[in-house]
Length: 333
Image (cartoon, rainbow, N blue to C red; front, side):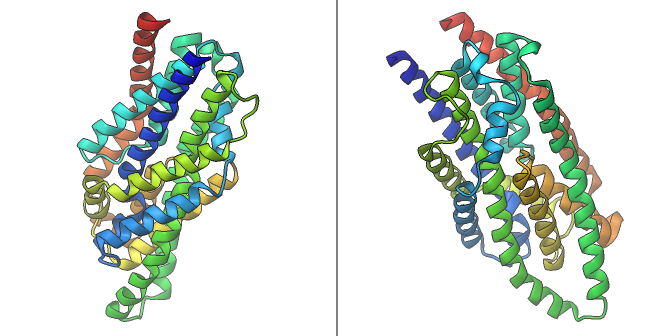
């Protein structure tokens, strides 16, 4: 039992480290547009994001259950805790690499890829829950497409409604509106992203025989919410710069539309228990808004670089986690 508890302590530490890194890696999702338009000062924006992330993280658990049981059944895996350790290490390594280069890749993709790769390395492809994994991948693929369309339609509607308004008055009004959409975006980020760490800790608890269902314990909720809020408070300035300035020149009305569109898609996914990439969703919403504003004004070269990171994240994190599991197996199992 002592060995099990030590391994679980390692799992919890790594899961909370992942959540912390997720917080500063994905802070840009919620506040890049409001900071770039000066609707919020950076320190105020980060404090707002951290607070609303914490509140959002405590509000739902459906996504945690999907992550914990959708990819594989923890009760059937012989080395579930070691699988989780390998998955988390693979995801953390990839998150840090993309953060260093300022690439807004997906923490969700990294974790899902890492968990899948570690499960396959341990128990083979047959251990993967085909239907659950398929549903998760579909949600990850379709959510950015939906966010692009929603962002495009929202921006088109706002252009029609405010076509004859003074640009000065529009900017003033939507700067205030951005405070609300930044808070909403931060809340929805917490409802979806923080649950992924909760789900993987619960996965390990069930695999270790320390609990017999996928209900998320209160201490796990509080720990994950706190870790994400602390990570958010650190901020990810390289990614904020990419999101806020390198896709297209953002004005308050654009930022309002992008945040509202992305947050609506994320909250809908959370209500349906689907894990989605908050990074992909807000980026796609920004691209949709930019396209509606002026297609040629979007820096499609940067957009292409971001899309490449989306495509490669799952296979790379799968490979990293599989390799790490093989090392753990060679050294300890």
